Each structure stands twice: as C-alpha cells, then as structure tokens.
Length: 114
Image (tube, rainbow, N blue to C red; front, side, top):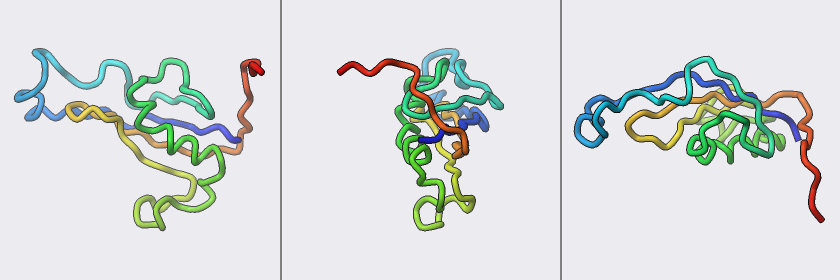
C-alpha cells in the first residue's frame, strides 16, 4: 500500500445558499486552508476533517492500492494518472482537494489485535 498526498486546493463559500439556509455568521470552512497538505493510507490523517474524510476516503483507498496507474472513470474525469480531485460534502462551503498517488510505502503505526 502506498501513501496518498492530499492537498487542499481551495475553500469555497456559496453566499447565496448560505443566506437562505446557513446559520448566522457562516463563512468558509474554518478547519482547512488552501495549501495544506496531508498524507493518508489506511487511516484519516491527524487534523483532517472527519466529514471531508468520509467524502474522499474511497479515492484515497483506491489510489493507495494502485488505482492511480490509470485514470479514473475511463479518462472522462481527470486526465492525469494517479490523481483525483474531490470535495467534501458541505453544500454551503465545500473544500476542494487534490489526491495524488505517491511511491512512498505506507507503514502501519499500530499493533493489530488478534
């Protein structure tokens, strides 16, 4: 299994939808900032948003297990092999991520219970 580099490309905010549905004072995601980098493999990286992890982990898992050798979805989504661009599930202030397969081997940092 390989490590996957997760880069926060940008945070967005839909002011029109937020005005209609959002809590008072809602703004862009306060947890993540453009340019932040995380590395993942089998587990959510420290400091990474739980909800964002739920949205991207299947792509991380696929890239970590070699799906990055080709392109996702028959080449009609991303043109670069080993890359996926995803967002979290927040409809008012989604965060956009770039996931990249690396050549770095993942290491287990826990003792399996048997």
